[in-house]
Length: 313
Image (cartoon, rainbow, N blue to C red; front, side, top):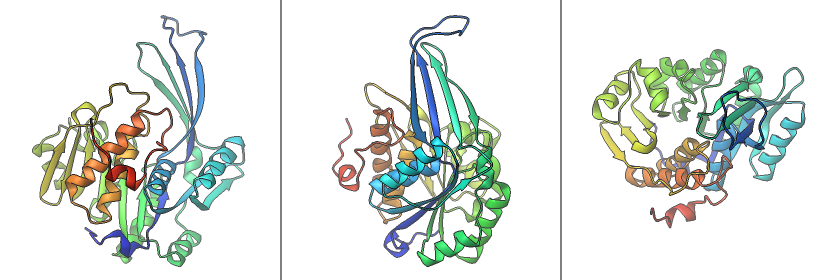
C-alpha cells in the first residue's frame, strides 16, 4: 500500500468516471396502477466522479475530472457546475455522438424507488496520451476511480499503476452489477470501497460486518478496504487491522444518494494525510451524515475545518 502523506502528492486528485444528471420524481400518492399522479420532479447533478471531485475540493484538495458529457443542456449544466466549484475540467470531454449520462429515479410513498439509466457515453472515457500528459504535467499521484469505466480503460490505468508505484488508487465499486469489474486488479488497488450489496456481488455470498467477511475480502487480494452496511455502520480493514463503527444517523434522512461518496471523501481526507484510521472513519461518518440531510448529492457544509470540529449527536 502507498501510505505516503498527501503532502507528497502535490495535493491534486484526478477523479475518473461518471458525471451525470439525476432526474428524481417523487409522488406522495400511491396506488396499484402507478399511473399519472401528482408529485415533484427535480434535476440533481450526480455521478461518482463528480461527487468525489466536489467533496474532495470542499475538503481542501485540488481536484480534476476525467469524463465525457454530451453536446446537450445536461452536459452544459454539469460542466458549468463543476467550473463553479473550481474543479479542473480540462479532461471533461464533449461527445458529438452520445447524450450525457442520465439517471431517472422514480418513487412513491411506501414503495421502493426504481431507476432507469442511460450511460452509454461512459464508454468514451479513455486513459489516453492526453490524459497521461496532463497527469505528469500536474504531478498527479492520486486517482479516484468508479467502476463505470470500460475494460480497456481499466487495463490502461492499472498498467500505468504498475509502472508508477508512487500512484495511489482509490477504487469505488459503484454498483452491484459492475462491482466485480476490477477484481483482477485487487493487488494494485490501494483502497477499495463498496457497500454491503456490492460486497455480496464480489464475494458471491452475503456480506456481514464481521471478521469472516473481512478475511474473505482480503483473500481476494484487497489489502485495504471499506464496506458500508447502512444502519449497521461501516467496517474498515487496513492491512491486518479491522475497525467497526456505527453510523452517525440523523433523526430525519432527506436523501441517501451521495452519502457513500461523502463517506469515502471524508475518509480519504484523513487517510491520505496520515491520520489514524479511527479519525478517518469519524471524518467519513460525519461527511455521510451531513449529505443525508440534503437533497443534493454533495453537502455545501463540508470542509476540513467543519469536520475537525464536528461532534456526532
